[in-house]
Amino acid sequence: MRLASLFVTIFTALFVWPFTVSAQGLIRDAEIESVVREWSDPIFTAAGLQARDVNIYLLNDPTINAFVTRGQNMFLHTGTIVQARTPNEIKGVIAHETGHMADGHLARSSDAMNKAMRPVILTMGLGLLAALAGAPDAGAAILGSAGQFGTVTFFAHSRVQEAAADQAAVRYMDATHQSGEGLLRFFQQFRTAEVIGGAKRYPYFLNHPLSSERISSLKSQVEASPWRDVKDSPEDVHKLAMIKAKIVGFLNKPEQVKNLYPEEDQSEPARYARAISNYLQASTSIALTQIGDLLKEEPDNPYFNELYGQVLFESGKAEEAVRYHQHAVDNAPTSPLLRLNLAQAMIATDRPEAVEQAILELKQVIAREMDNSFAWYELSVAYEKQGNTPMAKLATAEQAYALGDYGRARSFAQRAQHDLKFGTPEWRRANDIVLVIAADPKIRKRLAQRRPQ
Image 1 (cartoon, rainbow, N blue to C red):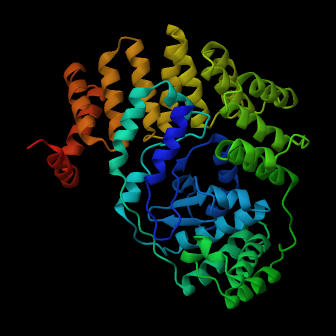
Image 2: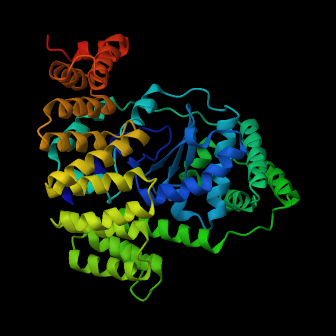
Image 3: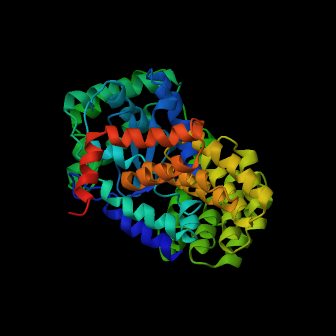
């Protein structure tokens, strides 16, 4: 997992913020994304948004922050999840940010963020990190694309906008029959910290000015709601505990994991965190035993199956890993990340029928996430194993285009055009890449600047 650590370090520098804390990079994880989506989509719908059009991104940063950018993009720091005491607090923050989005409070943001959101950078331990460890060419391509990420500037909201977003958040929580108490508690907690003098370390309150008047107004709204006393379901409480444990297990040092989840704590989240920590420490047999124990209790849990399969895959047991990744997909068929892991393991078996099935799986991933650069990379590997070099070149062009490496994208698209039959859908797609790159003056300028004098 040394390459995994390298990637976390490198992506620390990808974003530059107006406050003193730097974000650590984008994280992908099927389980966390599923939980956050489950909590967010009803709120988006209540706000009159098309939930499928809203992108949610998780940033590896221990501080509390959440924000939205142009194009219906919402960002959550891992610290917001880990430090939340209840699911309702997270839902309240999401509802507040949805208010900013629905009311158009951020009508502009840097074009660099649009580029930053295109690649799939990191899948936390369960997909790309492990896959990249066995795919140095893909790793080099992603590293080479780091130059496309620019400085991002976010604009602090005015107090008028904050009050409007608060009101909207309570409306959305009411519409979904949930209490707004979580958002109120969230603000009250950090208002106290702000008065004492410590809240300045939380970037959320640099961009979201907080005041006693604002809290008082929000409190009145929440108390007037017929849903104010609604509590989180036990299922939601458990889901929060599990994704917290997952974040801690993957992103905290082993000694920190042990302190937060000591051995005497035999709860499911604690065992999950320790299993993940042992996996990252390459204590393979211990990790497999611990994950196996979790699987005995929940054999159909897609994320336990995913983790078990990933440990097997990294141990060179791709054939065994396929069975667990397949079971994960069977129990969560809408997750593109789980399908990506399954395809990766199938390709590694080198069995022709498995490689053929992997191509079908990857096409489903790409249908949902057209800009998933690693899916395109794996598709190029699969086609190459089949001896289908023209399609491998086209997939490489797509991967490079998703990463913003337009020179490489154009080169491979032109090579694919040369080898593909004229007029076929594949030939037209290669042609589209070439034409789009040629038609964009910003891309042409960038390519010209890179051209040797």
